[in-house]
Image: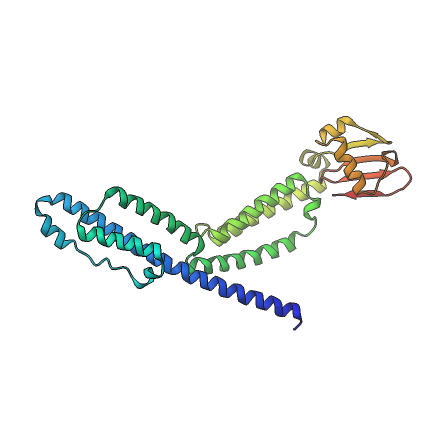
Length: 279
């Protein structure tokens, strides 16, 4: 085991301990927030009972008395302790303000949202792991079956297919509402559609011209074609940058320069019988 592997293991262990520590703290916070929310509901119910039975205030008060002593976990968090004490005092006096209850309740709800974002349910994490593993394995098999072109060689239509494939893959990894069979069906449909388009593009020139854009002439015998630059949404400075990236110092060296359908610029030089391609 080399030094890099040892360092990586130490980093993973330290990160795991940190995640467990903060996860436990937030778990306690979540329990405390749930306790406060239950107290708020009890306070609201007791307040409504006092309004309905104003003539029997003493009896109603004794019947709706509940134990509002905060759990031990709350005393580790000062602001939660203060909120719990305030609620206990308000209950013992029998005067609960509707405006303050709604304010505290909205605060608790916002805090619950934060806790839900930071500490998901354990079963949801297991579900994401299982879904991601199954879908990743399936996509690996599908990509091996596709083979062929890389991202840099795809046409604009092919890139749209890839984006759709990414959406079909990504959503079911997180959202439980989308089942794995549904996701796989969507992926298979997109892949089959891509293969059909790819086959028709190879077999039919007319279909290829209708799907993929034609090459745009940018330079002809050392002279820039302004119409071509406008079609390519490119100015002279950008084209000169592409020239320098291709190792071309002077535009007079260029016999032809075209923007290809895959977004790359091809250069045919006057003194060389080869093309220079850049991204």
